[in-house]
Image 1: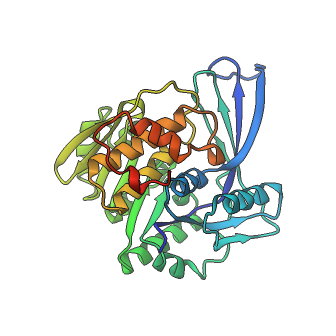
Image 2: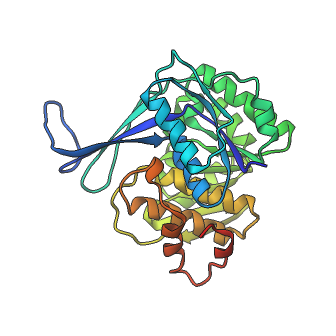
Image 3: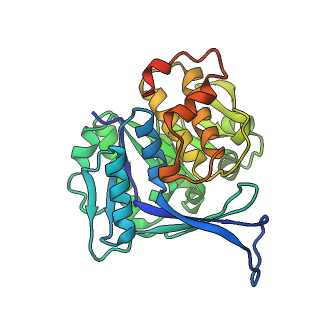
Length: 318
């Protein structure tokens, strides 16, 4: 049984670390040390889960180009179940350019078009999984939105959990569409800026309570280095983050999702689920790169050992 199914356009992240800080202005020249190409996007969550002993399967298509081969080789090397990945020869594998400044802050220049490939095995994949992951990126284009809706319908039909990560593109949907999607989720995870965009509230606690009017899901609001808060029913709780020297924040939220999903599906107490998620996100921010550069289980556990209350080491692949 898979822990989760991730229907998404497989893509490659091209990280460009430049000297100085944002903003970048037209005509300005900056020095870069290198350009890194790694499996990115959904791969951040999928690979982190694999390193923590979980099994999240990607569903989508890559091109027969160099970047498609990079993604397939990465999943093979990491032992990821790639049964639902297709190769479409005429497809250009999507890419995201990530400018990264000296403070570890980043931006995105994204190709949002891609392909899921044949969807004839989607129901089989959903039935094989304990949950599905849906993000705002899947909901941006009409064709991908219809596929995501079909996946959510199958998840409901087969009693699978739905994890919804709205992301920045979720606001492109109409208010009615947003409410309908939020209402279907079992867990909703978003960061502070996304929660503010959805509710108009700049304080996490107020945003969470405003979101409660839109969905009965477990609400998780990520607050970066400060940690996260959760609204479970009517009970709001804060879970502190881990203090690390920030090198690169790219993918920290994706990796947080992997840690949270695995703890949640394993039936861990909420405290330890959040500890794992926060530690995974912090370990990501403390190193350069994402995708195949996401933290190892040992790097995550080195942070968890700071908290004497964490007791789930035996369930992590050390």
